[in-house]
Amino acid sequence: MQSWFTFELDGEVCRVERESTHGTLASYLARLDPCFAHFAEHDALLAPRLVVLGTHEGDRYRFRIVDAGLMLMPMLADRQIWTPEGIRNAEPEHPVNLAFQEGSFECSGERLDTIIALTFEGYYRPDLRRQGQVNDQYDAIVTRTAHVPAIREAAVQVFASTEQLRHEAARKAERSGDESTVWTGKKDIFGDRFTRQLFRLPESRSLQYVDGKKRRFFRPETLVELIKLNREYPTAAFIAGGTGLGHFAAGDEGGTDLISLEAVKELNTVVSTEDHWEIGGAVSLTQTAEHIGRECLAFNKVLRRFASRPVRNRATLGGYLATAWASGQLAPLLMALNARVRLISADGERDAPVSQFYAGKGRTILQAGEIIRGIVIPRNTEHALSTRGVTSRLCDAYTVAPRRTGCAPYATGGFALELRDKRIAKAWVAYSGIDDSPMRVREAEDFLAGKNWDEGTMIETLGILNRSVEVTLPGNGGATTGYLKQLVGTLFQKFYHQHPRPGSLRPESLTATGEFAKLEEPFFLTPRT
Image 1 (cartoon, one colour):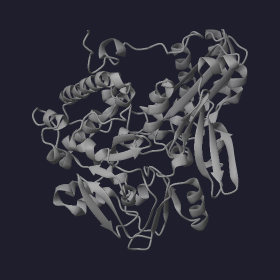
Image 2 (cartoon, helix red, strand yellow; image 1 turned 90 degrees about the horizontal axis):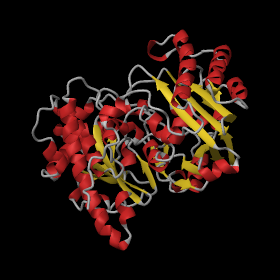
Image 3 (tube, helix red, strand yellow; image 1 turned 135 degrees about the vertical axis):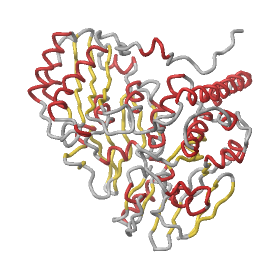
Image 4 (cartoon, one colour; image 1 turned 90 degrees about the vertical axis):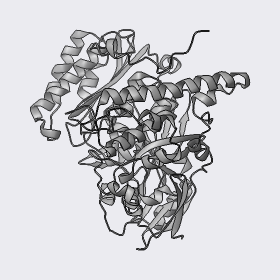
């Protein structure tokens, strides 16, 4: 095994020897140079230390904003890291740097570093196209001491410039039929120092690293290697995005070996067929949304309430399920989507509906040596629905929390109906935050089947929910059991009022937000020819 590895830090190759497998990038930077001293003070919620990770994801090259305090050092092997300081020094005339050189943003230098890092990622994002996405890009900024309108105005100007550049590159690529590579970010249209180095990155390779205390870190490339390592080191911990390993980030000095899932090809792919998606267990939440979010609008909606963008860039769908988070926002929606979990071990494969994956009290059906290979989500295309004799499918999810982002939710409801004209053929009613694991309410589902989707049915369902659902989980953030019980009915009512007609696949807006916020307005308006 090797005791060293290299990664690129601010454009220069950095060699790491015998660094702790449990040490974080934040602590490493704080020791490396006085200009990074503030990285030593890290709080994942209030003071994340953001850097930009350059990574090769299949056939796509991406800059991803990440929290240096949640990145273990061996994860960086063969990767790129750009700090805000490095971004400023590498290309002072870069549009991101120019946007924040002047202006009154009313925040500290450290907070401005965070803003620069977030803007840098947004500048290169091929999917950042609309005004409404600005809030999601900057949800990692939790502060009351910043001039938000000024930050937003500067950001919109930056994103408009890159969108214009993308339109011009797409027009030139039309002649050769390569315009899709521009819109998906597979082609370098910028040609600056950052992207030139990014597009030279190799795919993640196998790594076997040992630190100064003989703790091992493995990064296999195939499932066969992964299963073999798991059998050879049964006490080793699996690690994918690393966002759940807070005890390592806090300086845990235990002897746990680690097996990374980041380079396992079978776990890092998204397979799309005519009737379903299969999301690899180590695919990040952000990547999942990029693949299915345009068609599965409810997933994008719920994901915007999940943590912050730096966390979503690293957290994986498989890791989320494995934690068995009782209040997790995604589980009720996955149940409503009728998703299944695929498990694999040396003994073979099996699968189960997400609703049967949870075993209560923070446990799952995962057995020793088993790995979440993937999550299968049905696609509800017109062909798939007609094959089942269904005319429409309504699906949505709703979360209530102390504030919009950066906190644990009180409760989440996920609902879906398959209809034949006005009559309900099948129903899914699921909640998290009210029991020790996410759950489906079978009594309500059975009642809804065969009924017309109208106000009378909704009212009768409320009575069934009130009788059959017992709140057993103490409320997060001070919510009482009575309040959570009330939310069970309130969230279902919201689902009805946003989907009052069987043919209303897109929810009705219950607020006037869209009328004045111009959420769908693009950053760059294509000139008329």
